[in-house]
Amino acid sequence: MPRPAGQPIGLNLARTAKSVSRAFDDALAAAGGSLPTWLILISLKTQRLGNQRELADAVGIQGATLTHHLNALEADGLLTRRRNPANRRIHLVELTDRGEAMFHRLRTAAIAFDQRLRVGLADEDIATLERLLARLRENSTDGGASGRAD
Amino acid sequence: MPRPAGQPIGLNLARTAKSVSRAFDDALAAAGGSLPTWLILISLKTQRLGNQRELADAVGIQGATLTHHLNALEADGLLTRRRNPANRRIHLVELTDRGEAMFHRLRTAAIAFDQRLRVGLADEDIATLERLLARLRENSTDGGASGRAD
DNA sequence: ATCGAATCATTCGATGTCAAATGATTAGAT
DNA sequence: ATCTAATCATTTGACATCGAATGATTCGAT
Image (cartoon, rainbow over all chains, first blue to last red; front, side):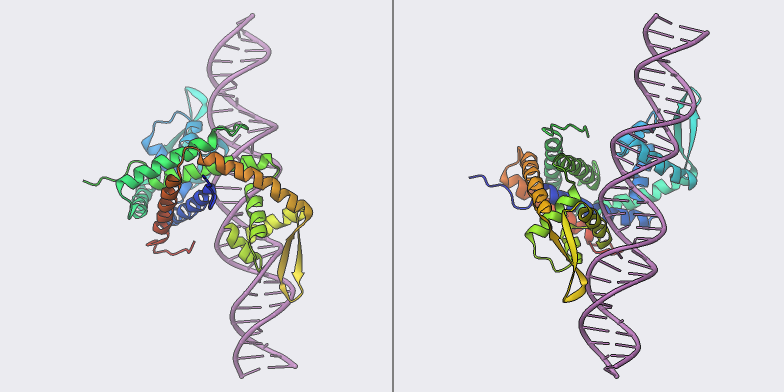
């Protein structure tokens, strides 16, 4: 008799993610940044992205939200935006020296946090976790019927 | 040679949780509710809570955020708030008939979603996932040094 | 060459969240 | 009895996020 439920699995996932994200954001704040700032900087540094839309996708947020963050980062002097002369719809986003420095500072904090998170977890555990998370993601998007592609 | 990193584990967790929460919220929206509404209703129905602070803790949000949601739910006629005559600092929050009806509607949607989420996962997988999530939660709160209790 | 559709970014309006300050009430100490 | 502390909820001000509407530019078809 397969009686599944104990605690809803989605709830557990959401609570854990909230706790972990919160702690990560604290760690980044101590280094002078924030979670969205870090995701934007690392995406800019490690990927060749053609436009802001692709950057937003890489970060996992909507274009409108990205614009908002870029405004703040530009005001802080961490990056610049200029129109691509070859296609003036496109903004070329580029890190300044200060942006580069912030990237390195946040990277140190992010690496330390990831290490902390992995304490007590064997490589095999990580692999298992990744498999289970992937399954949950699939299950959440499949069969939704109302279909909001994520 | 233990080279851990591939994708940061926290990032994977956050993305998965976002996708799953999003899908769950969609499912609840189709039933006329939302994620916070559901968490508040189920907490009220299934726990004996002495005040709003305890309700906020049960839901996993701050008191200020709860007040905000209760305003909306009260305006919608799903619940009532009245002062406890024995201790007038305390608001007694009670579901109306409409609130009860909403609870049952959302419960149906929530159960269906949880079933959907569990597809392809054996009881053993669920247990493993819970163990791993618990570990991540511990790791995120331990050693933070800056100490923000979550 | 021009006009309509597509693309890219931004703005606008809304929701959910938090931390800090405020207001009301109760409990405790003298 | 009064005064200070603590407790409970709300308000205020801020940020992150989204969807929809808007503005600018380019592309494609005629």
